[in-house]
Image (cartoon, rainbow, N blue to C red):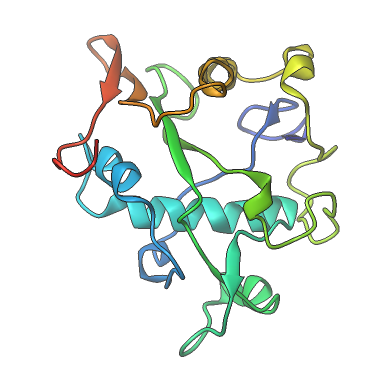
Amino acid sequence: MGQRGAKAAFMPSKFVFPGGAVDRGDADIPLANPLSLPCADRMEEDAPKGIGTALAVAAIRELFEETGQVLGLPGDWSGDVPTDWTAFAATGHVPSAEALRFVFRAITPPGRPRRFDARFFLVDADHLASDPDDFSAASDELAHLSWVPLGEIRALDMPFITEVVLAEIAASLDRTEAPASVPFFRNDDEQSLFLRLRGTSPLAG
């Protein structure tokens, strides 16, 4: 996790996970391996078809930009490398989404300065192609980058939704089987709902 700047317009001084908005070209970035079928299927429930690829690519890009960590496989890019990906490509890797696990979706309640429709991913650090303790390639967007044990994380000043997501993750770590659904905290102008995303494909369960 890392700490946002005190003068940031959104969530100043909060400790957060790396993340950010989907860029226009993210859907066109080639992946060495795609998202797993269950994750991709659940991400398309109550969302545009095919959105999972763009979201996974955005997560990998933001992870690299904000921490310097590489989630990818050794390989060469075909064609021109987009500007936002030149540093990633220079590591000799192509992004891979296979290890990402879609674990939570949340839409910000009305009345906030900024609203977002966020998806949260979990990935085992063993799948990183980079040194997990080397943050030297990170941008300056997050300060105090470090791995935080779950038992110590509640001492940090985090956004409420991050606390909710972490509670869900902590409760699922001992499970050996794949979860039957993904939590969806949906807020709109009429009501707030806590739903479950199960996907629509008969092969996704």
